[in-house]
Length: 373
Image (cartoon, rainbow, N blue to C red; front, side, top):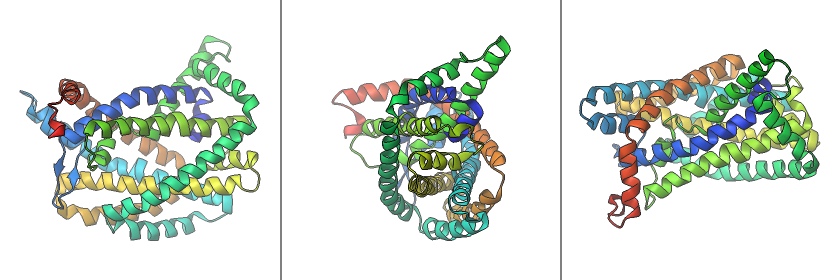
């Protein structure tokens, strides 16, 4: 959110909402397909993702076998790269920047600590990753939302002005002259969409990897939970963050990334805001990196088999200090590029497999659903 506001202005928030609205539909669709085409791995765990419904789903269409296989390989390759960009380097880079801003801790120290903790968790595998994240996520989410709500109600008189700025910025209504208006709208739209996709990952094909591992009674219920993920991530949490940054004026402070968010909370909650947000965002970013390790590992196994599991985890840990010490703009460029590359084959699959999706939804509405046997 901070990056979107710096580059695209308040209007970027509006376009993040638009991305989230359509992203909820995309998220639902890819999760249904991911669960339908999932399979069990060598440990007896469910594995799913875009690569499976690309190969087995799209590949089952007449004349599309080769196309499905090629797109599955491309998606896996792009996701493997993305696990280091959007999932690893961008997250640890934000942690390091935030720690330096809030506590003056050198980036190298943060990198060393993250490598040690990350290795201890990641080498333990999926169950240990799940055990760590399920304990950290509820705590940090509740704490963050409470802080954001305090800021919201403390500045409730500015709600109208903030939303006016968002809508005016989205359509360039503040600017004078066609060229300036066009430029403002383009920046707001571009950065709002880029950061919107980054915040909820809808359409990238990663969500099915997580939801396919679930053992819920109905995959369509699981897919509905995926829609809720997108709604909470972007429309609720990101909007709260954007409000805090805008109402405190920090979006023009010259700060970037997580440091800007911390400064916004510190302005409204002096003495505790910055520290609390630094801790929460550290957990947010760290658990995101852990989740993306699972995604990247799934793709590595798809390419090279089960033997790739341990080597991938080692390389993933080695990438942590690289992300900490790399320039922020380079990290974001890598993350955005990988986002686009992943989304292309995945969205093609969702579009072409829409008849299968509609059939599954209709069957679930009847008592003869294959999901109920």
